[in-house]
Length: 106
Length: 121
Image: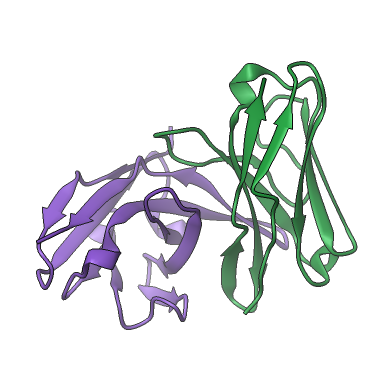
């Protein structure tokens, strides 16, 4: 089975840049998307096709995918960005999620 | 406005059966696959399976095949997730989500509010 590995937690100060990684074998050969999930809420798509933002997602969110690592970057992180973030890729007819990263903004 | 509205919370005993639902509106329900995702308490997201409501073509995550049944009734724009015999380990939040494909990229762009399933004796 295909695994996507994320750091369990990332901390950042407000206004700074948060970087969340997602690693998988030959991940650059797949398209990665990212979801934000706040406590008690449903996931929200914040990035797709590695680096495309859905309508309504702030420009401070950006993405990249190279080699074995995809990255979600939040520039000028705000307190409201505190959430769990999950990467996702499609492999061999299975949609695979990373284990999730808790982003703390303090 | 695209909406996926799921059925409410359920409390069941081990061995009981259950069917939860996900009703789509605001788009052509038969044109998009609907996926189901499990989130166990305090844990991450797990893709369970996906169905194409127009012809009920269904794919399962091997980890969930045989444990649940996914179905759909396109006449009422509703997808279902069903258990024949619940176990305590089925306790969790279950989300439905609309699958979108933009060229080669695939994603779940709209999500239901979740259905909490609690299985306890």
